[in-house]
Length: 183
Image 1 (cartoon, helix red, strand yellow):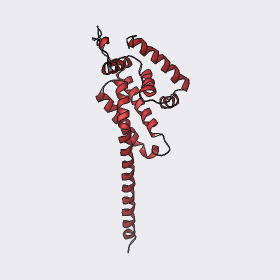
Image 2: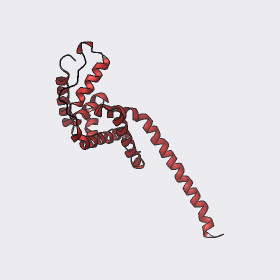
Image 3: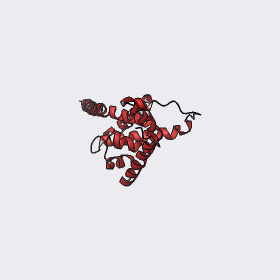
Image 4: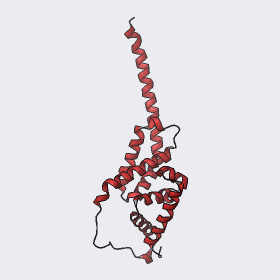
């Protein structure tokens, strides 16, 4: 028996083991995606107010995470990591598109405040959020919509705890100004 005949079965076993390991990693990643994709998409929507763009940003986030999944899948807070990747994608998109905003001569009609209900409040909040800077929006979305702690938001955004607290206070104050006393 030649050396090539001995190596062929060993290579076949090695290839099968690699395929099984990749299948296990893919199953693990799929389970992760199923558990976080809805929350990521919701956060992305609150940041950009466009469901299609939110879906794209979520897909970019998950694609970036898949490319490094072997490195991050153990020993990493995957949920916090995914939020950080999403916020980076939102910030990158905002920087690329910041010069393409449409300026209107007149503001669009506002809904009647007297008939305020849950849908109107949600729309008013998303409109007001859109008027904040993308950084302030990120703090408010992570802190209040995602119910993350101040420390978690600081870690996700790469800020100090005091910077998150300051941004949060200023953004909430600005949000109150934009919504007015009726809300």
